Image (cartoon, rainbow, N blue to C red; front, side, top):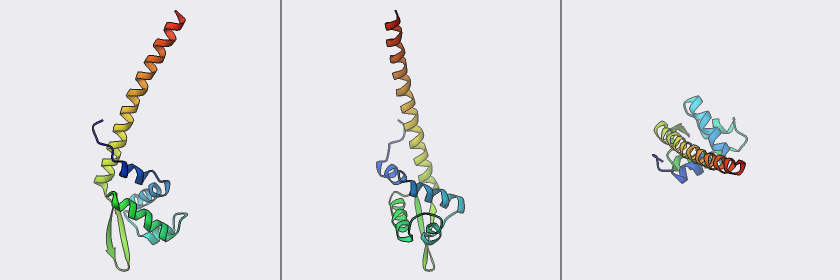
Length: 112
């Protein structure tokens, strides 16, 4: 693989609520825990905890905005995550192709 896999990053995006949060933040150009909680099936406090996880792995940046905090997706970190996913997918595609070739060889030898 060309990109090292970051387990903390993948643990963070492994949660469907956090993935939905990232989708909303990307679509809206940012948001607060309050605005996100209005669109998700979890409380504002749960949203804040999820944002904390995303922040620790660098997927979101936070900027104070009055009494709220504005969260935005870090596009460079997201691009790194996408590159990791592509790398892992490519490695698994190669492994599966090798398994397929072995299975075909075994099948041909049984037919002979």
